[in-house]
Image 1 (cartoon, helix red, strand yellow):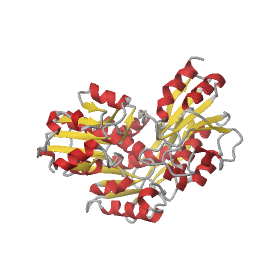
Image 2 (spheres, rainbow, N blue to C red):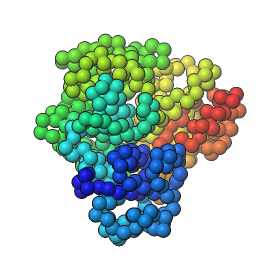
Image 3 (cartoon, helix red, strand yellow):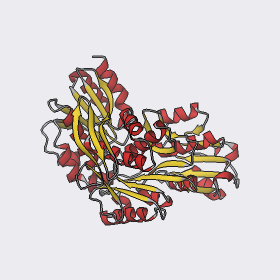
Image 4 (cartoon, rainbow, N blue to C red):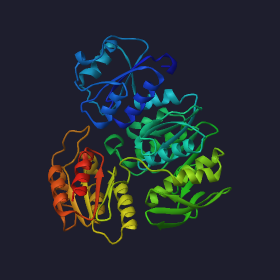
Length: 451
């Protein structure tokens, strides 16, 4: 399906962060955009305010008239998270509409454009957001589809006037194989989504296939140590081609130098804490320099990048209490997040509220989760957020808690977590998880601010 021939678009699962970015893109282009989601959220309410019609009823009768019968110029975009028995999804299938996954639509949009695709089991949202910000802030410009709400732009989609597009390439369900990038990045290839891939070797095979999608004259960047041939390595090691050096913490900022074979930038200031974010920034700088952007402009752009919502986001920082929220939901992401907190606040007691995401991920990485969660000072564990999955017998919060060696640990309901924080006022709080743990961010913020 050609982009120029699409006049109407319906999104089945419009509330997803990637889906909503596409919805905003088509609405900006002037197409008629509508959607369905099972739950009303801040994001869907914002889309409605932007003029996008959304229904929360999974019924054919809830559809706008223009989406009841087949139209050749109508595109239906769906997410794999939607149940196969969805009434609305099956209506579109039965009527013969053109159905595409989000990734396929990104492939349609990016076709004919200079495409920068960021892939990896961790770090892709932050990295793609930094790349897009540098291109925007320096005046180079780009269109971007991101997996998070960037704090600088308060959006997950950026609109550019040139032919450059930055996309977050999702490995889930092998979605990124619809892209043919000019520049590709692989940030990590840790085992994940084993419900789809079965084992790590099949996941790695998928990343190799993604690297093989690169255009003939394209450039592949890979985090140092990843087994991807013909790639430019980046990281903190002295053996990396594009590397961050002389890393130090100054207040709440990380400061470092960037070097590669042809460039050197001293004393780069980064608001995002953690070595992993320094690495994410390093490859973003490498891409910007490859595109010919001036080094001083790059340095200034990095310094004023404010981050991504739910990626090490400060919710409260009032001297008495510090509350940080992060999307981390894999053992390696948790480890990186905890390390960053410890580097910034080495003397403070760390209270963590964690919501496991998916029964399969909790089962497959139970020992790894237990090991990293055992490194905090106090843990409150919420029940597993199921997302697209049915329960697995014996896999629950208690199963995970039993493996954690921490003394101060307990399973808690969300409302009781808020009450506990209100009563005890921990000095350093971290909420982590990819489910609906974000629904307690505001209540926790209020509990601390109204001390």
